[in-house]
Amino acid sequence: MLELVGLDHIVLRTARLAPMLDFYCGVLGCAIERETSLDLGLTQLRAGAALIDLVAVDSKLGRIGGGPPAASGNNLDHFCLQLKPLPEKAILGHLNEHGIKFGEFASRYGAQGRGNSIYIQDPDGNWVELLEESA
Image (cartoon, rainbow, N blue to C red):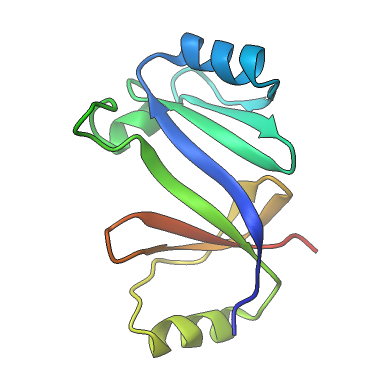
């Protein structure tokens, strides 16, 4: 059985990075924790124990997800749930038991540091990242 620890991060796609930074940092009190090159286009904001990732849609990373957010479009790229450490084989077995398709495990950076993660989709097609809690 999987045991969730909490929400690790959310990823928001934006065509208006400066106003988003003003809102999340200036209004809500987040702090910039990590920034990639402008070309890659990722800014990670600390929100308590979690992160809010802002991805510029005109950047290398942002172009992967399609056009900018719109009233009829999707602004959320994915959300990440933290898991208690569990062997990959056990996680894959659990997902297989439930008929869930999945991607490859990889080491990725999250709110608690690097961890092993895998992407799945919910019934509505929303991407969910499952990230093992850092030991």
